[in-house]
Amino acid sequence: MNDIPYNIKFFDDNVLSYEKWFAENSFVFLSEIKTIREVLPLEGRGLDIGMGSGLFSSALQIKEGIEPAKAMRDKAIERGLAPLDAVAENLPYRNNSFDFVLMTTVICFLHNIEQAFHEVFRVLKTNGIFILAFIDKNSVEGKNILKKKNKNGFYKEAQLYSYSEVQTLLVKSNFEVDKTMQTLFGNLDEIKNVQIPEYGSGEGSFVVIKAKKNK
Image 1 (cartoon, rainbow, N blue to C red):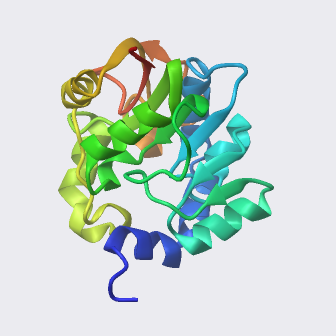
Image 2 (tube, rainbow, N blue to C red):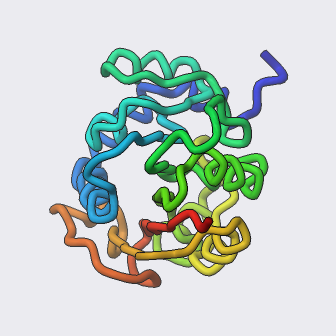
């Protein structure tokens, strides 16, 4: 068990805490779902990378995904989903398999973000869509996480990125940024309703980028 990466083991051991947090912060969760839906294709075969316990996948009706933490994967299976045991840097799918790929608050936990983006590019069909959702490190919540990360097991070894850093990595990986949306304005504990997504970045803590695979 000692060779299991910290992030995977922590998520494996804390499924209940993960689920409880989203239950207690339902307006945060619903605001994030609403923002992802703004750019999510209405049809086609989709893949959720870092499915977790299946909360987001289930809400967004994406059945296929990968999740390296077994307890999380088991919970996703209970929700009727079909996660595989794999990591983002080595996807167990053929080239040109998916119409869209979703990655929600996963990039901060990746061992090799460029390799993961390369894999997303590989499994996407031509003109396929990559939807990347993350906490901007320069946002209110991003700064809160960085300030308290040593006391928060989920983010203890996380590497947050800014919008400009993510955009640069996407372009480097031959993706074209098509649209950017944002939500979670202000401190999370002050969000008492479902927020309306806004275009762009720089104000909301939760940023969603819709990028297209270039030929």
